[in-house]
Amino acid sequence: MKKRTVVIAVVIGLLVILAAVIGIRSCAGSRKVDGAGYVQANLDLIFQGETQEAKRFINASTSDLKQIYENGINAFVSNYLTGGIDSGEAFSDSYGNLVKQIFLTMKYRVGEVKKMQDGTYEVPVTYRPANVFSVFIPQLKEESDRIAKKAEDGEYTGSDEEIQSAMLQDYMRQAYSLLESAYLDMEYGEEEEFVFTVSVVKNNAPSLDETEINTFIERILELDKL
Image (cartoon, rainbow, N blue to C red; front, side):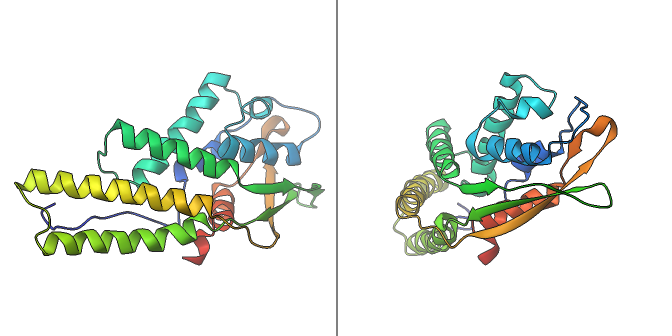
């Protein structure tokens, strides 16, 4: 690379595209608002790729919901693991599969909904934060610095394109190894609670604030500790 450095964009506002799922409003009205079911369905779609319950609330086909999930995973890999660099389909697929495995291990439990005087519903979610990214990201920074140092010391040779390619391959291999290791050694913290506020739009359709789901994702992945 011209600056002889490898950049990885890791931002607290993680999974914005995945969280956009929450912004899709239910088109099916009902007499009773199932706030807890709505929160469960959205979390399961984001972390588990489950579409069955989401279809109760979101006016979309199973294939569309699966595509939303896949697009979110791909966007996460591109924006926050590969830094938006064209790393090749093989690397992207490998990262995507590993991220899916990590998300599948997230531990959360939706509690009993409480209706508030203002017409909203509070839905508590008990969760155990996982340290995979809080371990991985500092290691990734160290790896980036190591590769930059190798470039400065002339350990990569050839044309600018060849050097860039060699650095990229080195970075991708090591970053994947670090992420896999952090996943295999992942530990969970003590139980914590997060309270979602489900509001009601026309026809008794439930709705969630994107900010809340982003905050929950930050906390369950320990990104708030970075």
